[in-house]
Amino acid sequence: MIDNAILQFDRALRTVFASARSVRPVPGDDMPDAVMDDAQRKHAAGLMRINHCGEICAQALYQGQAIMSQDPAIREALEQASREETEHLAWTEQRLGELGSRKSLLNPLWYGGALAIGLLAGRFGDRWNLGFLAETERQVEAHLKGHLDKLPEEDRKSRAILDQMKVDEAGHADTAVHLGAHELPAPVKVAMKMASKVMTRTAYYL
Image (cartoon, rainbow, N blue to C red):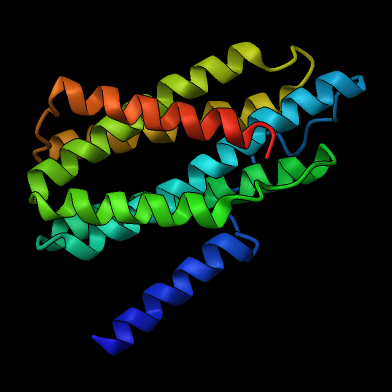
């Protein structure tokens, strides 16, 4: 138990403070960077900072849910999704650097809150745990679609990253449903959307 606690703490520190690495090539990495004015670049950076925060939260959610799951197949599905989210973390971090910006100053707070939510979701059993995962990924996919509409048209590199992230998130939701996810009650979905809005509005600036 102590060894596992140390490993989980180390994972949290690496997620929040270390630079993530990607096995897959970064989408759009071979594209030339677009010429954008300061306002466009700042806006694109704000959107990518939100997406980076979302990946920080995803890592924490999956970690909490995997800790609580009693089913090896579900734990493996959560770990696989977590590995892909780590790549998203690397992609968005790299893009933030290219845009001359930084990660959110509140990443430790986002991580801690999401970890608590993941642990709580896991306490209700694997089917509800999976339901929470599926709904999270559906909301993230919708959120990414919105960002694709808001990005400067010229920013093809950011678009390539978000396009691939959207494909991956949809796949995670499908996997959760295939493994037996329960549909969450409407009030829970609304609460998740409200919490997401608080994070996105804050992370755009901080």
